[in-house]
Image 1 (cartoon, rainbow, N blue to C red):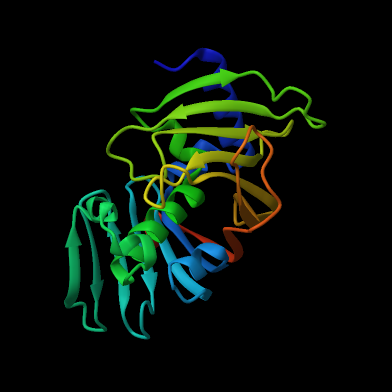
Image 2 (image 1 turned 30 degrees about the vertical axis):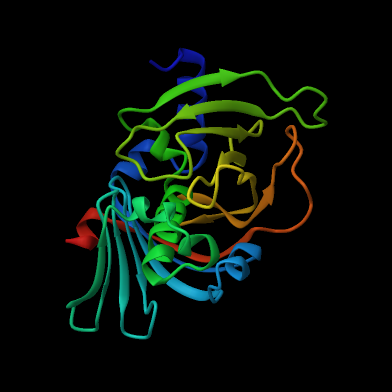
Amino acid sequence: MSDLKALKIIQEAVEAHGGLAYWNGLEGLEAEISARGFLFTAKRRPVLNRVRMWAHAREPQFTFFDFPNPGQRAELLGTREVRILDDRGRIIDRRGNPRAVFHGLRQFFVWDDLDFTYFGGYATWNYLTTPFLLLEKGFILKALDPLPGAVVKLTRIEAIFPDHIPTHSKKQIFYFDDQRLLRRLDYTAEIVGGWAHAAHLCEDYQTFDGIKASTRRQVLPLLFGNKPLPRPRLVELEVHRITPIHHSEAA
């Protein structure tokens, strides 16, 4: 059960990012995002350059358009499946229970298109739907003390994720500033490795038709203590555009 202080903070964060009433009127978010970083090099993946994406507002469903090739699309369907479709909507490749394959040796050295669809799909879906996601059923929230010695005292919330949400790790820590904007989240990217502790920094907030979102993000190693290392930049994300899609528009 979540503690009341933590729940109040997340409710305030939801209002700061656009408000629950506005969010509940959305079917999802369309976005145009670029991504690069050391993880792409390590897994032999091409960087993403202004790729169009779709994130469902409540269900863990995500789509990359014109990926991995023009005219194709790659889809994440929660924890159960990833698939790639051609320009006629025919499935040309699919994988059930996609998280299970990351225990294999190959994934340590290289990710194929379905591997990346799973990782990139759930990760970006999480980023685009937070903090609204944290009010969904099944989350356990706990307020933590600010980091000792920190120059800027950010409010910290520990979140335990329910099993049906694909995410980096079951336990994550979210940091909010005095305006309740998300400034950082800490997690372990478990499918990369149990050692892959990271701090994900959120900067350059903009408002997109009612939704306030970070447009520049970077993921840094968090190997010792609570201070991230400056290098390497594991992932860098640039959000060029977010278009909220309302229920009436989706219909």
